[in-house]
Structures are given as structure tokens and as C-alpha cells.
Image (cartoon, rainbow, N blue to C red):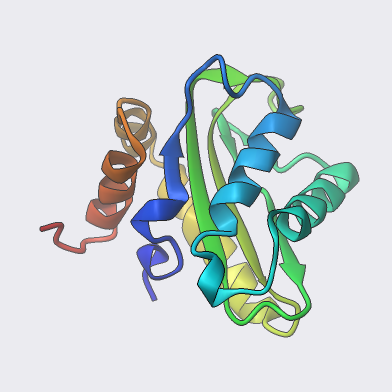
Length: 159
């Protein structure tokens, strides 16, 4: 599995600074992205938002270096889903290093697939640990470009 198997291009976005200024706004935008395309899941934006907020209430998913990996699991979800939100100006997120978060990569999976979910989180973490890759993501002007960078980083040719 490569990350772009669960992260189609329509679930990647580069935020306008004026639109995303808070953690809650970022989680809502990620939830909107996770709900796309709506024909493949019965889950609503509200379902995704609830699970991401519940996880954030336990402890921030801001792992440092400007990265957060909001995640959770939902009963009734058919398969793992991911969303990518790049916020070039950064936003307060209560990250472990106290710095603003600029790259958010959300993963939500079915409750029954804990092992697969943990492997996906590890894969996301490895990818975002690369400082040069993070810089390339931050230079993306639109979601499709950010998505193509993820695909390229995974060694998949982008047409």
C-alpha cells in the first residue's frame, strides 16, 4: 500500500491563511476533505470532525517540526481514508515542540483494523520526518500539487 491509495488528489488542499487560523478550523477542513467523495462512505463531515476532536482532546497530534497527524477510527467506515492540509503560514496546534503546525495529514480508519491503522501512521510519520520533503510540500500552491509530491515521494510516477 502507498499513501496515495487512501489519499486521492481531491483530499489534498493548500489552505488560504485567512481561511484556516485555528486548530478547530483545520480539523473541520480535514473532516470536509475526509468526507470526499461522499458516494463511497456513509460517514458525514460531522462524524470525521467528532473523531478528530475526540483524539485531540486526549493529547495534541502535533508531533513537532510543523507537523500534525490527526487520526482516529470510526465504526462503519469501510476502509482507511486520509486527507492532507498544508497551511503555509502555520497555526497554533499545541504541538509537542510548541511551534505552529503547517502540515496536517489526517488518517481515519475502521475500528476493526488497528494494525493497519498503526502501520499507516508510521508510514506518514516517516514521510514527514524528511525536512526537504516538508519544504517541498510547503511550496505547493494547490492541493493537486501537494498530492503529486506525496505520490512522487513514495516512488510512484506522476503522469
